[in-house]
Length: 312
Image (cartoon, rainbow, N blue to C red; front, side):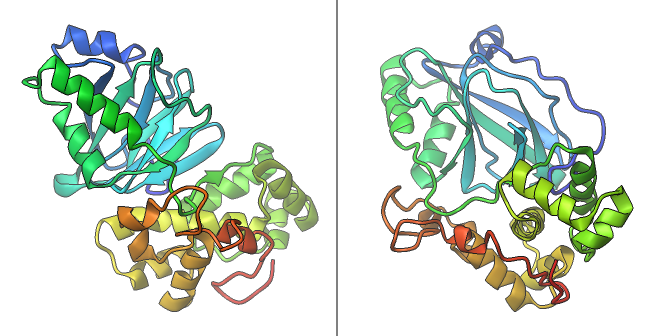
């Protein structure tokens, strides 16, 4: 998997369709929640699979990547993705942590009795308490009563993030999908829709219609999300905003920061701060305007390319 969540090499098979049976076979402590650790190299990923339990995909360092339901999520350590039981997904390391490795530390929650029942993948904020609880539940010395209390608190802490997350839905039509793959590999590519149309044998208007119909976004808004998402592993690894802006094809750091803030509701630095992301759902906060609408909605129909000022 490349930095932006594109596949780049053979996938590692997943052997934990039943994570609780997997844990019991290896003496991993569990109650209603079991925490599983998997170490991955940057760019390594698990092949598509599903579990009979809910999963919270989280990487304490580096950037986790998840592909599910036709979308790609990249998750710094302040964010995790709730993946409902039975959802086919692939998980990988979009960006390496210390030593070039990323640990995917996933709590799995038994379906029976689980107080959380979100039917779709949902991004949650990982604050200091949730982070510590996940680590606490990996300790085999924790007695059953204490484990049950910690599991209850962990479930209570799962809240959707307040800021708009950089989910990138992918088109299905082969022509639009080709454009998406090329831009995923080269996010700074400045070609407009007419030029892409020449490359894939379709008019610019046809491509525009396909992106709108299959991703729910105008091409300009979709490309902005993809470009910003491509910078997350760099920013998580400590790259400068200027370097991230160049990688994504923005002419200046200020143009990149403006696009990031307009799309997510927060600055690049704040995106990696869980306290900012975890504003209460339904109240005006990070990523929402006072009227309750996502700030990203304002950008959905903007089609200006910030790399060169052309319209697309």
